[in-house]
Amino acid sequence: MAEENDRPEYRFGTRAIRAASFPAPVHQVPTATPIYQTATFSAEDSAELGDILADRRPGYAYSRVDNPTAAAMARAIADLEGAEAGFALGSGMAAVHAAVASLVGSGDRIVSTRAVYGSTRALFSQVLRRFGVQTDYVDPTDLEAVEASLASGATLLYLETISNPTIVVGDLPRLIELAHRHGAQVVVDNTFASPYLCRPMEHGADLVVESATKWLGGHSDVVAGVVVGSRERIDKVREMETDMGAIVAPFSAFLVLRGIETLHVRMDRHCQTALVLARYLETADGVRSVFYPGLPSHPQASVAQRLLRAGGGMVAFDLGDRRAASVFLDTLRIPPRTASLGAVQTIAVHPPSTTHRQLDDGELAASGIPLGLVRISVGLEDPEDLIADVTAGLAAARAAVHA
Ligand SMILES: Cc1ncc(COP(=O)(O)O)c(C=O)c1O
Image (cartoon, rainbow, N blue to C red; front, side, top):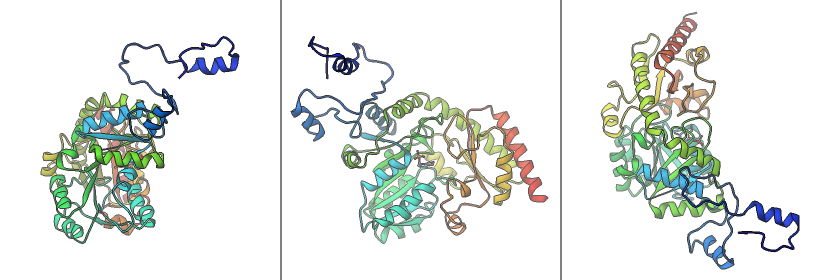
């Protein structure tokens, strides 16, 4: 890299291009990770460039391969997840794809939990299928069914710590032990829990993926994802991504790093308010069932108590049918009309028509997703205001159903 314009004969254009990339005069370590907004890095000589690109020595050459801000994000999340290494990607789905594609190939079979994020299901059933990978879906709370499915041959068991959208909490240690006993590796999507509530690596997961768009980023202002695991497995992910090109952008990585600093504080409050809301919903008219891991009524309450620090920020409940759900959602004043989760603002969705729109009614039923399901990502607004908003929504839904 040019250190100075050391030749007086340089003309203006040459001087300007060189001058703009003189190294910043910094002698201290910045407390916030800088946004390394650069596509390329300059090596000392062509031998060094070749060595870096061939992974014979550490360093950066091209930001599709690796970038310091992306690496800082990956390192931070690997640390929080208790993993040796990580790789940061441009979205949660890029992370899911990278993790799974680094482990399976044509002729392999995936066993996945039946309630799984809609795009993950589409990736398995539509995209990977075209490449000769078969996926079967199981209820993770039925260990016999999981074992039977694994016993018929599987390369990979795919789990979500807290399932999207039904908030099922599988017994990770037992599921992972079963998979390993049958020779399958395990990928866990930890998006709904975040490493603050659960660290699947501690229960034996081989790779953990996460959409950093959600709780890690926390502010609905970035789309990003991450895969963490052993150095060996992450090296495979990195190697593959060099050619796939789905690395996170530097500015996105910066936003995720900024989000991570407050993850614990935000999650505590998300969990507290979610518990208040879930308790309220249990007593509310028109609500058929409530799914929240912090409630004693949750079908896997004891598993959740063992695995999760707290119940999390996601609450789901069944209003009986699509119409009640849509009237409820359209009456709410606080949540924006959007379909994400894990943000400072509360987000309420009807999974069958948004996040799980890829599934027909038969597939929804087979996945245990009721047609009247509403999923709320509880934000940091004041709980009293949220309860008032939800109360108005439920009243409108009841009125619509009885009209
Ligand atoms: C559980 C889960 N995993 C992965 C993703 C994909 O994340 P992204 O939207 O960042 O690609 C989502 C998105 O909602 C999700 O809910």
